[in-house]
Image 1: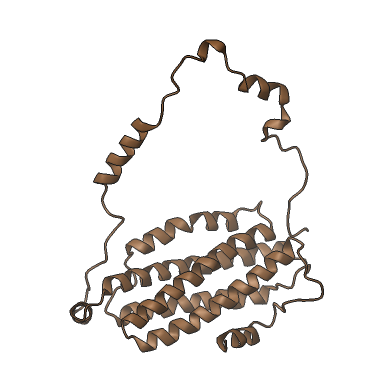
Image 2: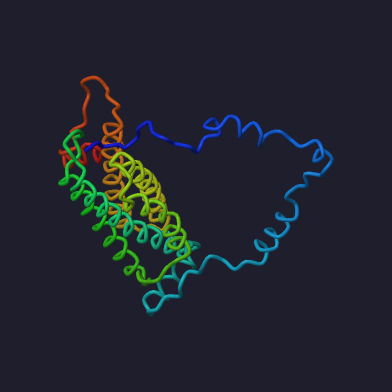
Length: 261
């Protein structure tokens, strides 16, 4: 079975498929020439009203424990913004949960479609899936260590959930090829890398040394995931670079190489 399903077929979506009808559609009736085309000002006005009067996407939950209340108060007195850190931790928690499910879906698809034409293996995917699950637990523990509740949904977590809905749909669509699925995974990994970079910076601002170290390690793993997925995607669409290859099966050694940079 092919890794990608792009082929020439009876695609009727383009205007060139019916030149006679398309020409007729573009010809303007002379009697219509004097009619004012109008604009979108009324629609814009309605949207502006909704925007001006809308509630926010959500809020940061108040600490549910005494430890959490004390921690947030101390951070605020120091001039920090603990609510921003908790919001971004919630975002990463939501995205890592989705990332685990994305790899579950890709593994299921590859068990049927993978034919050995690219260096990616099921073991590679299960390894990355395990990393995503560990990152989820890492973030959950970090939230609890700050006195927060990892089961609550922060505004950025809500946002991340909506943003990733399309990726979930791509991976679970039985019609999408491995190449198309890897494209969606690559999009997720790009976002994941940026999210961990933000968390490292925020933890550093709050002088949370242990979190900085743990988050940096997770960031390096995400960088490796991205490099591997991009290589597999390029292989899946037929891109080659002479004799240069990235050994997708040797994940651990590549992670060590990236961590040392």
